[in-house]
Figure 1 (cartoon, rainbow, N blue to C red):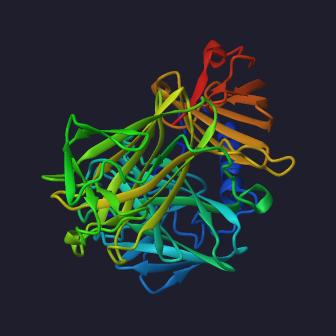
Figure 2: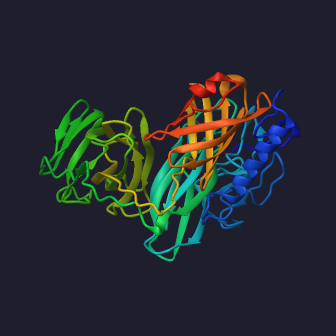
Figure 3: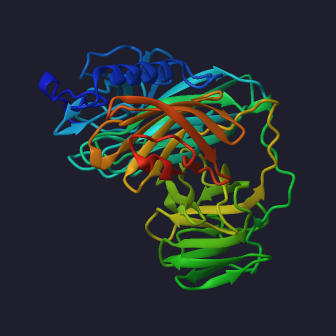
Length: 492
């Protein structure tokens, strides 16, 4: 981040006090936010996941260089990171925390290098965990257009989280979740800044690592709806497919939506490696980077796993291989980035992700982020229904951001069956305007909501969780604003 101005006049609160909000409502809101940030999700193995320690001056920050540690975290990579107050502001932009009073800026003051933080926790060998975290982004004013954080587990990259959310005058936060499996008695989780040198802000907050219910992975016993190893059509060297062309493999049709991709025979093209069989796909084809996609049948409301392996074309040399991964139905279901670097080109790295289908057909899309005709290679792709095996009494987690009424944002934090929601409707100004608290049982949230804007409440709230994850509030009481009963919160 650029050299920071610490003048008190520039420091703004995470929820700006507006006329009509009232001190009692804001105090209640801040107390709940602080409690959630301090405790984190139940069973969280990460210490200081909200970066609330060490406490920094209100509106200020501190800098910790590589090789030093602070409250559970070791600083790694190259450069400096900064625990920073959520009251910090610069150039008319409020750098709010996602939860609590502080967050971590992975870019140091006046410089931006690949610095990061890591933490080692005790794990159960073979057990499965969910890693969740929030990435903060500020657009404009010397802060770039997006924020990218590479995630590593035990030194191996499991993907890059990219948030391109743009909120005028304020840092915006995006939630990312990644499944991980422990291979030993400890696990080291690392986050590395991957923003370009001219992007001087990259936020990280509310990191959690929690065991999957019952200590076992969500397992898939059903047959895959998409399985791909690119062994067909056979090529004796490589075959290029360009924008508008399609190719049919054993049971799938892949369409090149732009640029070009190469189906490569790795026994001839020694600069590439396959995971399954002898052929793979280079997403940067001849003559340049491409986008390819395939569509497959799904059942709305059902959870699916996406798995594949990726390496990189050795002609990249020391340049990282990078690609964007998207799963799309009626709307986006899964979006992330992968990066292959710091390991031999012919070492296949695994990717595992999950999504909930919202219709009868779903599309997976791979986009090369490397210029030229060498990029990431992908192979061994599988999409299969997930057969959940939750422990008795397990409750689905609704935590995340939702949209409503076309101009609002609802942020949900959930610990166990306790659900807390803060709703902001943009035309009414900055800061949350409604507070909701309730309990989740099955697919129903029952509780109360309070109008911070009108300083009135509490009123009865009933939310029905739809199979696709949307939340319908039609059965709620709303003597203040009839729109509450018309609201459907749609998962971002």
